[in-house]
Image: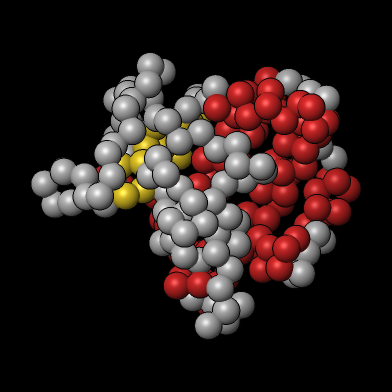
Length: 200
């Protein structure tokens, strides 16, 4: 079975894993800054993503994480990125999106590259728009020298996840890429300590 382990984070590992302690909105999978990602949106996107995996002759086990986590990670990354692009007035053209969608990435196939990032074909343009925008934002911050500022900006928008997913995995790695760790039936963490919520 071919493996396309989902990238632990988008764009130079800039994903913030600390969550605010604000209350969760009913029916939300996550709240990201001023945007709410609903459970129904997450479930619909995950269904489309699983169908795209099947069409590519892959299954969920190839990801290294549950498909719903891969999709939620992508939805959160795109939401954070779009809010940053609006904040810094970064524009992305349709031509730039078209070019990005042809990028084969590390898997030498644009389709597999997108699937490895939790992206079904129906969501490809939105994802590519966000990734092109993130690259342009880093350039605006000074290229390679601006990477630290980009990480800080990305981390300034802290997602709040629905507690039903478990506790955030504070020690994500290639070996353990899951976004959440199982808290067990009675809410106690197994193996790892829960990250302390930060003000937000």
